[in-house]
Length: 305
Image (cartoon, rainbow, N blue to C red; front, side, top):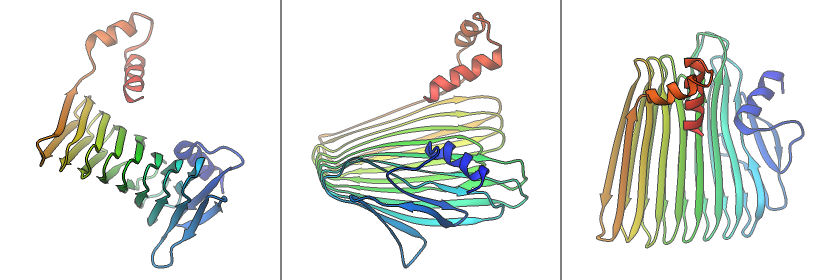
């Protein structure tokens, strides 16, 4: 891999030097490197582009990295990845895509990830998106994430996009069985004329299922953001969704909540707040010697953490 691709890997997957554990690196539409372990197998699909990641029941303290890198202008890449997490497993999955576009044509990656999480399994999923390059071509990312959780399973998801993506539509679907838990934290920043849509649909089907969907975002300049979240409670369950956004310049932010309770014991809550940076926060930091721009950067960094 060249230096540009290696730099992008560091941004989206924190990969430095020698790789360990299970991994599959996709570069410019083809597999560039792969490794499996005794407990985690990675198999190339035969009917469409993508891979199956098979994690054996009881697997503990292992990880799998599946980053994607695009460094060719004009490339449009689509990949379908399915994860089969065995009963009682406890694993970390790191995905993400980085695009470096220095040309005049649009570069695009659409990653469709489907998770089948077994009983009492635990998954931490980290997805980072990043863009760079001084070309006129756009950097476009349209990820789709589907999560199907069996009884007693726990899934934690970190969805991060903080730089360089011109257009993104992020589609997320989850269905939870009895006692399953889903925790999602989204951190998103747009600037210039960038556009970002995040759409979450969570269905709580089992008794005691719970979901917590939290988005923190910053919209600068003339960028646009739409955050839509729907939580459906079909049993005695609990669901919470929150959208907290900072708006700057001429940006446009929309929050669209939907709560659908179909059981008398479904407890569903939504919170939303959109506003500018508080003046007293800026004044406090500027009194410590920071410029207004430096103070804004500190506040935004802390807010998105």
